[in-house]
Length: 109
Length: 224
Image 1 (cartoon, rainbow over the protein chains, first blue to last red):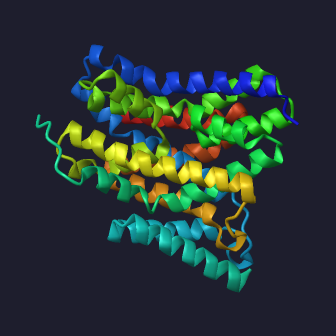
Image 2: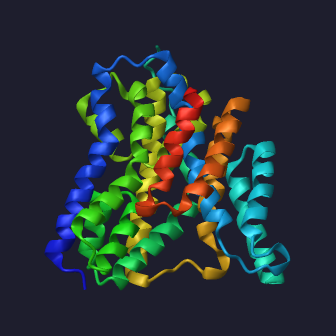
């Protein structure tokens, strides 16, 4: 049981802190002179952040397919990345990845 | 810069988020069912979702609260996890620079991995800042609906996503499809590869600092 006073205190502090993180640079944007160099650096942000989510979640996941040493998610992700590179389709990438994982774990696990 | 927005941009943003929702919905289901397991009421669960609106930090906070961790640890862990939003907020700042208070507040509130990534993946098709913002809000509305509905359903019905379908795997798949269009030349590919490798090495850092450390190192490498 999470005591209500404790819950609300934590949630409100987390909410305020998170909104400050999300909003501080946006709030200051009108006063900032944003250089071309900064804009260029901003364009690297997806490449800097998203792989750091994906790589540990997929690589350290212990799967069930012994032939792939439990790394079926990693192998399928590599194939899905190639497919995405060719098709440029989010839907095709996700559909292929989920279907491939379903088929491989239901047949080889 | 043209400030007119071609018709249908909001809808395009909404539609661009639809396939990504396959990763959001099972995450929301987990969030809802874990909140119910921790004996949080539906009101508390919805309030936390509306106020914080950052799933990974919420999951960590519930886990820590269930173990009676000190408030300082709970809040700091959540904020470290959310520190990456500062990078998205920096990247959005030139886009929203000349908008009014409410647009800035709304665009800040809906900063998430998916909303920012969807916008940047479609950046080359958006012709002005006004179009980018409209597209971003369209994507955000889709995200808000998918997230809140799935959390509420998860709280009421438990984790409804069938385990055999492993829908959580849609999250890394959708991130791959969102990051690829932003890799404009070889340097971007190097940064993405660097981020992947460093994140594996730093995965064990305490208080979930590995993610933000990796992100900052990767941006620093791009600057260098």
